[in-house]
Length: 341
Figure 1: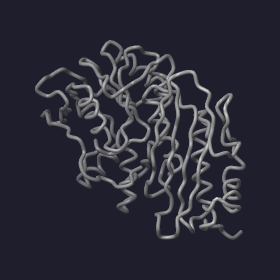
Figure 2: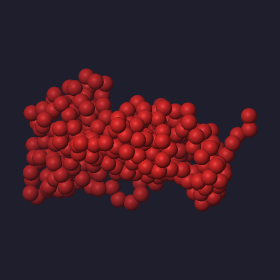
Figure 3: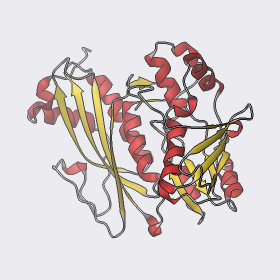
Figure 4: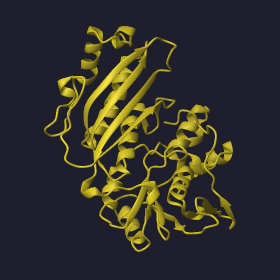
């Protein structure tokens, strides 16, 4: 069978556009929020009936390469926006997507990407209620860009903000850090053989958030994407006006990530994650939170440090190194890995 490719008419809003959308979305289950109007109506908008606080997030995804060990741009687009809503304490319920694709792009690849995106939404019971598709002339766009908006509801008014870290809080991370960033960096540099069996950690963090919501003394949660763990901790410290001290010895990291970082001369703590959560929790419950995470399959979850009130260092992150010294863990600068997500 001859391969079919995207042409400019697919984005023109006419017959070809309608046919492509039905071909891509026609054989998938299209959910909608109960009592609402969704993508199945193929209208220009959607309806969400609501009687509670709403959290929403929008992001655009340009990752290169678009297919990578552990996922592709479609899975990443769904996962990333779900996670942005989930770490604020919301239950993601609905999503919209915008896809811009280059003329000449294989329709079979577009189907794989869209299928991966929809699979994540279905697994998380997130209704894809609307979307848009545009086509750019060949050479005016590098393959494909996806934007996703996810909408969530806050149960019982509980919200987690970067500014809510308190002195005495323990800092936890739900798993190994830098996996996604290491995979994408290696692929971009053409040294994929160095990553071995390492795959991106691209996955929704909603199961983690549902576990920790059972505890009353969880104050902040963040997914350490661009800028990695280093940026996430710095945002906690700066926005909450505390000093965060972490111990390098307790930060979980795969050997492949550590080795690749050493070879390239980059800080692995600045490498992006796409399926991890950094938590600030009261000291009295920290061990219990760690236990429940490990009990539910997050074997590499770890308590890595503590928030303190130290007027000389408030707003900064201090890292105790394996050698026993202490250094400031600064915010990453520059473009460590372009198009990481």
